[in-house]
Figure 1 (cartoon, rainbow, N blue to C red):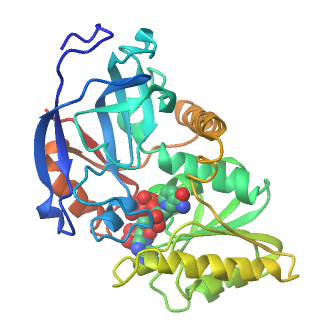
Figure 2 (cartoon, rainbow, N blue to C red):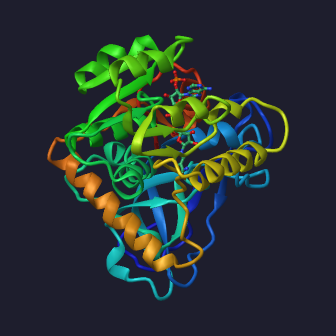
Length: 352
Ligand SMILES: NC(=O)c1ccc[n+]([C@@H]2O[C@H](COP(=O)([O-])OP(=O)(O)OC[C@H]3O[C@@H](n4cnc5c(N)ncnc54)[C@H](OP(=O)(O)O)[C@@H]3O)[C@@H](O)[C@H]2O)c1
């Protein structure tokens, strides 16, 4: 198609489909003709997408908001607008944006609402920008909007090598916060280089090790693991401290209802909050508030993403790209992301 035409002619999209509960090798590739963008929509040509923890849950049917099979996974992407539907500004064509899609981004082309687009400046590499869309906004909002930790404070980040974790520790260090991060020993040297005190999460005395490093308690704990050990995270807080829970990785491989572990967690956090203990417990959800007011939710997302991109542009935040795979090798990308060996985010690009 002609990249300068506002109304696109036919676009053939290549998509990676999750057909059901399968191993990564069960992913299927299909090509199909993209429907023309509707009112207010654009066609994006994907430049970078990636594997997030959500896809690891989705392929097991364990995501809280599990989409029905079959579907195209892909939580976020960076792409260039190659066509616009009626009512969408034709000037968008040729410009680069990021979008959070929850599903659909593992594709060469896709249709998204123009209102969901967040600008990506030309000087920033698409793969670098990709690592800080959901991961960057989540980390920024948990640190600065939920926990509101100030310079001089001390925090604990579980899973400090992960996509969200490796961004969060850098944002915190940039804000003058002391960071204790848990990860397997293979990542400790890299974490030290980022100014983080690492603790081995496989050590049965992990929480005692953290207490040795912060005997007076900490200002915030960021916990995406959930399960019974969340009690230990809660106990690490000093008076005035905040527990930010944002996932239930511990139950990824458990059989049963995908929502039950989260609902159990909500009940626990609610009970802690109801007690007069001078501490706060929150569940952070990136999507919170979207249904109430889509416009202000999107405005906040774009503001926070732009802040994070500024830190990438000035070198304060180093995007952690674990590896890059072409779309045709998404099986290998998902396998690597699930190998429990990587630091940062596995990125998917269109290919040769
Ligand atoms: N609530 C929200 O709005 C929101 C938004 C974005 C992400 N999240 C959550 O954030 C978490 C991180 O996402 P991500 O995309 O950054 O994932 P990721 O890159 O795959 O990183 C996952 C991290 O968790 C560790 N981990 C995984 N399973 C574990 C287990 N059973 N016990 C201990 N540690 C474990 C990993 O350590 P190894 O590398 O050693 O396995 C790694 O450090 C996920 O739980 C995701 O659901 C929530």
